[in-house]
Image (tube, rainbow, N blue to C red; front, side):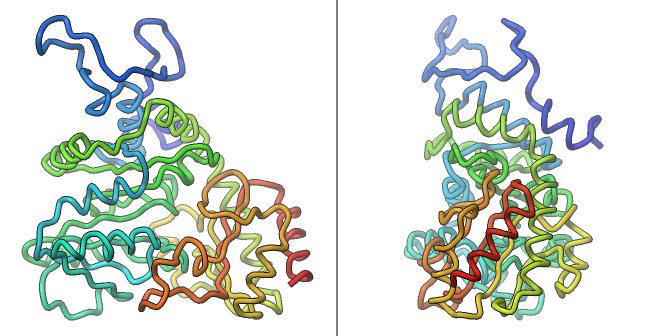
Length: 378
């Protein structure tokens, strides 16, 4: 058990005061290389692609927040995803959930399938009959954009019965380690787009993963350095700064999202609402078991179809029409036409009437007023 609680770790883990100056905030080590006292003799850093002190602080912080032993930071969430997929060899198979981020689907289908990977997308991981034991099980929970939940502990227990046991990677971007800690539920890798809630201010792009197993961490660290898709020190600093307020922000995101979801369930122009924290959600028991609260994402189907959805997202004032999520400001989008176009005309295609909301931390009453005005306009 960690010595400190999550809120304290978010501020202090991996972030001791600078030993040279006493600086409380982790310095931005804006350097590409480090002086060596003699050939091969250095102070732990030699070249910034391999390691940088600012990045080290971020990686230690993320590992602590996830209840892991190792953290690795990347230039984007997709760079982190790519590193995990680099673990596989031709002929290996991936079992992935059938509702997932469009960029993840794109890299699996349009990049890695041509190298001989077999990929199956299923909605019920535990209910399928396996023809071949997968090398990797890829989970999003909550999923993007339908906010479906998967019982991480149950899936990991099932995977333990398989031989050889598959690696289990959980994309924890929507939940963040504040709401959910996949490693403590049995997963091997907890992966993030740190662009989203961890950064929290829509001003940086990054990715990361946390792990427990030293051999797996060593291999992924090698790939991190060899491929080179690493974040710069300023990026790492901004993500560390964002993490300090993660617990406060996630509580406000969730409170606002819950209010928005309840409002949407009562609106005549809404056919269906997707939010893990709703009492009417058929998966609410999973949410209670593995999440601290329902999070800040809400999706719903507009009764006016694609045209109604288009008019709606173009009529809001506070909700900004934009891709991405997890910032302090509220965002709105149509996944089928924006973030998930790579799934068009595939079994993973998203209903073009589905609207995804990243609910920010503005005043809840103002957000509800904005949505009501958009409904009148659509």
